[in-house]
Length: 138
Image (cartoon, rainbow, N blue to C red; front, side, top):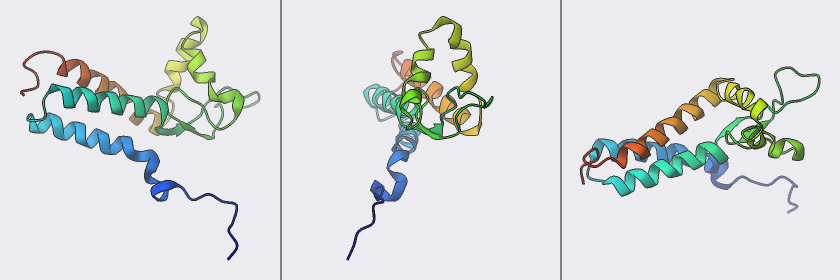
């Protein structure tokens, strides 16, 4: 039997959504309160990393002749799509003073980016709150 050139995604394409499961576990850890601050901080960091580097969002890198930017799928809020020039373009925008506002506008550019941005902000706030003694009962 001949094999085709297409690669099959691990877990049927659900492998890139592991951060959503970590987000649900984070919510459950806050509700349960038996998890303790270490678990909440760890899950918050995992969700934040997923939002930054693997969440499926739109690239939106600057493209000549297209005002809305690149429409390819990207990996995370800080990385671009499969095109080499776009790969680190959004991350570089954080360090160029004139482009920080453009980067921040891109965080709320479409529905997927808004959800991932809010999940990242929520997990960051969750991690900070877990560091305050008495907030998470252990």
